[in-house]
Image (tube, rainbow, N blue to C red):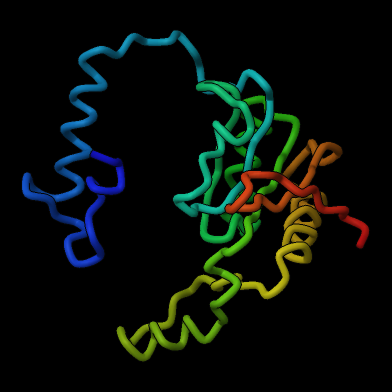
Length: 183
């Protein structure tokens, strides 16, 4: 049986014949924990790098970048956009946990390409309160990567901004394309 045959359909997502998806995850954790051995690591990444990327489920960052457990800090959000909360996490990563490099990864076919700030207004109309956060949608992947690199490089909270590089991950080929910050 293929892996896709085990995946829930949109109609059944969130439930299975054996409870919710969360129930399935908890059972999987019990199996994992039964064979778990403490690797003896601390929270400091071995490669001293923080990777900021989109939360898209198609991005297996460790596999795509040849990373293993303990190599990096991985910080993800919708679009991989550098927001105040990303700066917060990078500040902690650098100042308290020793990272020195930042890798930013956006990707092709991103859902943020089809959203606008109108999304906030739609939510406000539905629930009666406008979200305090910005959608941070974008129309140009390369330009948004450049903007994210600039936000990291100019943050007064980040002491290490010399090694900040940005990429677009192609979801159909698995390849990274580096973005020149000057264009």
